[in-house]
Amino acid sequence: MTKRFTTRRPPLLALGSIAAGGLALSACGDDQRADDTLYTSPAQCIEAGIDAGICNAEYQAALGQHLRDAPKFDGMAACEAEYGAGRCMEQPRDQTAGSGSGSFFLPFMTGYLISSAVQNLRNYNSYGTYVRGGSYSRPTPIFTNRSGATYRSDPAIGTEISRPRPANVNTRAVSRGGFGGLSSSRGSSSFGG
Image (cartoon, rainbow, N blue to C red):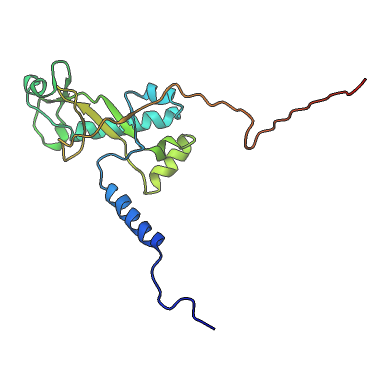
């Protein structure tokens, strides 16, 4: 009897899996997840088929983050020089935080990114459970500069992101039988009479 395997070599599939896993993990550090979708308003989010409660909650969370983290200017002229005429807003300073009186200026939030995990939730109740579960991916506020480059609001402002995937609001679900549906066809023929 001869020995079939004299030396043990690792299978190529395992090595390929390790390489692919490394690439996948390196993508985890990207600024934008590929499955995030850009919405310009809660209405557009609702039109895309996402629960209204989820759309409104994500918008409010993104707006709060934008007001906290977007670049701030002391004057409207300075903000508009950077982001363009009509693309900035005035916001009163928070008097309780000891940040002084008056107001500051920041670019308008032009949209917000919602993760695919949130988009796939059925309703607002499941959204609440998801948010409290600890793996929640917060919405990302978006603003654009004078030349149209898209940025996200976060403490590391200035990170340009690629064009986010826009919302597809023309999607309609259509049932055509298929897997899980019933479909039948009958044919009859009479031969000779």
